[in-house]
Amino acid sequence: MTQVNSPGQLPQKGVKPIVIIGALFFIFGFVTWLNSLLIPYLEIACELTIFQAYFVTFAFYIAYLVMAPLSTRVLTVFGFKKGMSVALIVMAFGALLFIPAAMTRTYGLFLLGLFIMGSGLAILQTASNPYITIVGPPESAAKRISIMGICNKLAGAMAPLILGLFLRLEDADKLQSEVANMAADDRIAALNEMAMRVITPYVGIIAVLLILAVWIYRSSLPEVDTDQEDEFISASNFGKKSVFDFPHVMLGVLTLFLYVGVEVMAGDTIIRYGISQGIPLTTAKYFATATMISMVVGYIIGIITIPKYIKQENALRICALLGILFSVGAIFTQGYVSVACIALLGLANSLMWPAIWPLALAGVGRFTKAASSLLVMGIAGGAIIPLLYGALADSWGAQTAYWIMVPCYLFILYYAISGHNVGRKSSEIKF
Image 1 (cartoon, one colour):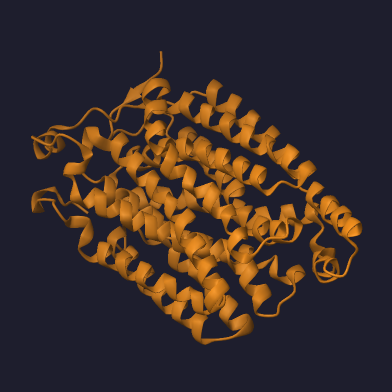
Image 2 (cartoon, helix red, strand yellow; image 1 turned 180 degrees about the vertical axis):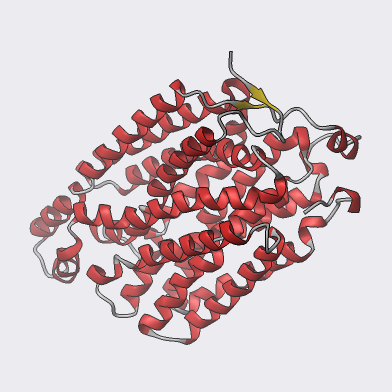
């Protein structure tokens, strides 16, 4: 029989669930941050404008908005463990579409594959994030999520480097400069050959996803019953009919929307931005890895300091202020210094996700699944904000367009200071 745990109870064999969830965070980090290299790669292979290229992030992240309500239904029917296996299978099907997309060099088919992969991740995120949040004390939730973040971002650091080996980007700069002067047949043949390079790595991704799906299904990962509430939470939530009765959750969704938008920008625009600063693609391909490394440094700081030395809402305040500082720095400097400011946004963004989730889920009790579903919908910020950046980059320039990040960080700062307490009684606030 599957063991069921209450929201505040750490499952037995406590280390094993952390390892399993860590593996999931690694794989969806790897899949997610491949986009940073797919953007300039598909821009060349499919002959796209900057705005069109950023539909890579739009297709991937808009799936969170579309699929999050269905994610809750999947978890209700299958539970956390089987729901995660279903999500991995969905992701594998999305990766499978990259094969015909590459063979026909059809950008729309690439986008469909990305959307389906994002749909699987929506289910996976809806399950894994509240799971890791509620399997231990709420005041240390940011620490546990930080550990997961290291798994996620180490994968993100590896992803563009590994994909870059298969895509053979050493000749991409040369091809991009030569393609305009090629005869039509030669240009098509060269671009078709370039597009085909993506098949091998995505076949590998399909295999890994299916192996993980079987592993999760056969594992002893315990279920967590989020429909149970302790007496304190039950009394606090008396008379509340739905998750929409929690203003701090609604503000948390908007905060997460803005945070994911700026995080995706820091990781997925930096390669393309480096190129706009006159840096060759063969060098710029490493920049997304620098962003991920700076995030890992932030997560390590979070593991050491939260909650022993700093509360998670205070960590969120510091990160928001750093986000404003580095955004402005990127706008008013040039070359490698400006690119470094974008990479350092990884440090600023690192503790935002770990802090926003527990702050937004605090005290929601039996509404945890619904709240988690809404928060996952907030991940759609990764679809909208980078796309707006792409449109602004076409008209204002890639550097000036980074002004879009400043108001995002300002709202995150507001949530860290007071927004996470809106609608909550003082007796409910325990952080």
